[in-house]
Length: 291
Image 1 (cartoon, rainbow, N blue to C red):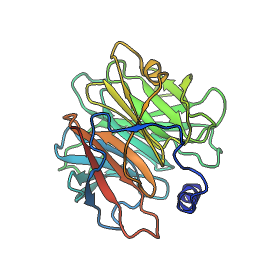
Image 2: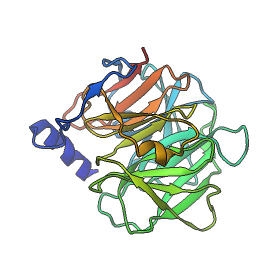
Image 3: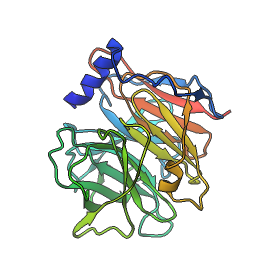
Image 4: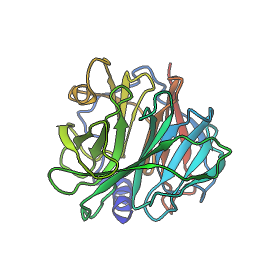
């Protein structure tokens, strides 16, 4: 958490973390100015992942990172908090991303919750929790799969996860490496032992804070503190094959510490959400509408 704050203050000083001059920004079918809905301060100040709910239309799942309870929140598309739901078997060591996707039972909607943050590069194992998406009437999730994994080459700090709905493979994208690396945890994941993630590629940039894949699997977004990158995907391609191509950099509004992004389920656009640094009065839930 402390190291994340450093990047924010450097951004304000204009010393680093800025967009590369060579980046060509385009709208690529999305509005460049989002519909902004302000969040009430203190309710979700450390949001680091969002996912559009399938079980609860009109709401987003939001998770907060280290130092927060083991709970996820339901936030309306208008930025209004409905409730928080306890994930009883899980521990929030450093939750950094959340997504919905397919899983072991055909036809069921699952939530994947990534405990993959490691600012100090001190951990040897990392976790993804997988559980059936709860309805808004629930207060607690009592059962979930704990997918424990290790990298093949030591510790990594990561804040982004993708799940391929066709293969049900899990992808983790690192943050601190000089070029963000892409690791895959292949399905079926072992929930009783340790999975070894395989290195599947790398990006041409670093500092990844969030990622998202559209419900139809044909589009991918990856976010850093300063940029949003966009890929179109032929679904005959793997995710790593798609990310090997050069992305388009989308025009977007600055966020103080943006660490969350997801497509809307109907594919009419995408949402972003920032953490709220202490010196910022409030942050917005942003929706970039498709043209």
